[in-house]
Length: 295
Image (cartoon, rainbow, N blue to C red; front, side):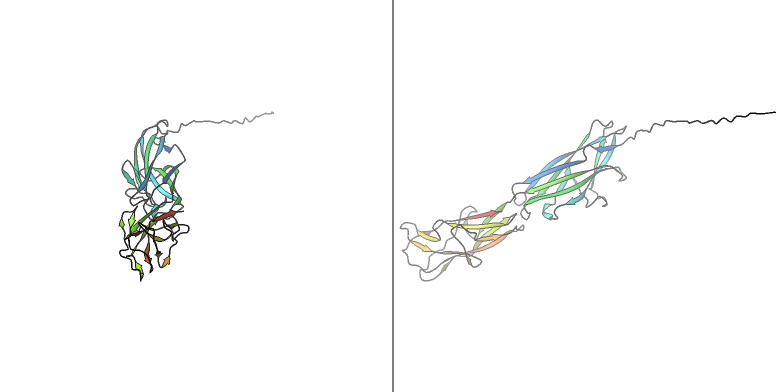
């Protein structure tokens, strides 16, 4: 008996579709990077330059949620402590951490509540930057790059972005005349009675200069370095000296030079010397314009 058999190979595939549940909290920044720019046009004791920036956050999750904003330094073009800034939001000061792996401080994490769900309406977080621009700061532009992170209560990162902060300090200079009567705009040096047979010297006085960059000081005499009689025009030559060297009173070349100063400024001592002379009695005067220029 002949038998014939057949083998039937059966194959099948079963497919199951599972829908991933939407997360209740998925906050993200609306931008991957933002830039803040500040310019200090004037420098003075206690001065500050400030600006605000808005950071916008979306929540693509299914429910309203909370998060924390944490800021740390990513890089900086200057280590000058005079350029350290303060960061606040709604009156709360925020500590900027040295790096993203630094331990959080009591003021480093800003609470961001009630971020609306759906990914349409965003939550705006205001940040205010305040830089001190007192004497001791250097002119020029510096850049701080900050890493801004959105984290949960456990420190897990939802999202991050870069915030670049540019501060430009324009060249600025200030001068005060010390040891003279009058004010900072018009000062008076009284030489008293001149001795025609000896050298008459002024009491010590000088210039205090503050500058954000290298600077020059020029002296321009109205009478080419001479005291002139108020009535008849007689002239008595004199010298102006700084640190022992005679100053050019034509205004053509600097009488003093300096670099960027510290908070206390530079002091340039000055002295007027009148050598022996022959002239009529009377009142003699000269006017010297002192100009300080920052480069």
